[in-house]
Image (cartoon, rainbow, N blue to C red; front, top):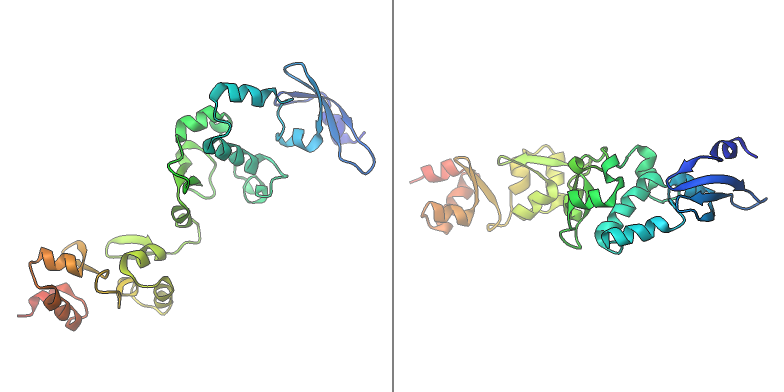
Length: 248
């Protein structure tokens, strides 16, 4: 018997106590176990060691009776979270458990996870870690959309302009300037404020004045000024509101 098998015999992993290891030439190894409920079972060794299998099946039955949510998206999220962090056979393990991402002790229980996170807001939301290198825990997790999660990636570029710090995609949605154009301008050394707004459509371009940020239409209404007249003045003053209003 292998040394690793000797160490495993007699150990209790979750609800299973390993009685012996069954190995056959050219085949996978199995554990002969006794479950807490008294049942004897033979389970794939890797499943017992990784925690993928925790009992003879009685644990799943008990959980279904306890919270009646085993088919819910919240439960599937919780189960997937634990697999990514604890099961080496999971395809995503390398990017989670394999690089040190863990699940906090409180969230080993689905009831605690659901109590902290609540219902998933919509089908477009999934579980997101705010700190991409941090653990799955109440203070580091939220329900977020794909766009919100993309903005949270470590390699996401954020641009500060008009008193706000947004991603390039968020600026593009606000101003109408294509993301590729904004990125190219920044690489060419453009000032952030011009990079995100220059040559934007007249209806979406943002203009800063006296600590406020508004579109051309919004400023024309706020200043009680003809929109076309204000637009022409701004074009002549390189979109400087102070200069535009100083003209007679």
